[in-house]
Length: 185
Image (spheres, rainbow, N blue to C red):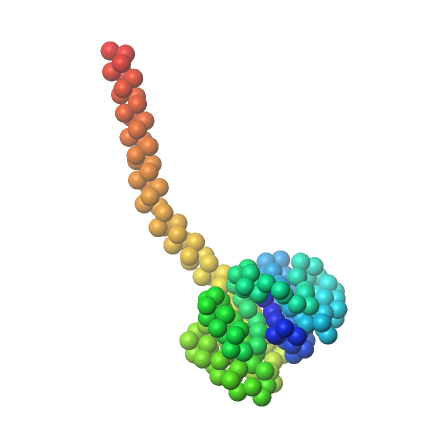
């Protein structure tokens, strides 16, 4: 999961995630977190993860390579600016969007992505640790289920190939044995 609130971070997102950590204890072993805090909240957020046992969390002031950060994460928690919204659509990532208060275009971006089924929106005045944890939990389950489905579909798609290649290998074995028998006669 990737969290960020723009290049300078977002105190609201940072504080909500810190408050969400106790509600996400069951996810600690399987949910990898990369959190861009901005410089103002870096030490506070880093220490909060450590104090709550999230020792594998990757807490950074700033992420230089956002494209790879998007690629490495299945769930994004962010503001809803135009660039971020476009990146989310291009990457096809599930998102929890928290529009910057007073920025109508961010709210509209988040609403549009939510209507399309690509994101969930939490208005900042409705943001709490418990609410954020609930949304993360729900989306993490959807993502895990989707990955299992894709994995099963990939297995089923390859199953006929395995059967056919197995039949070809057996046929080659039989032909080799037959050739040996003919040569022995």
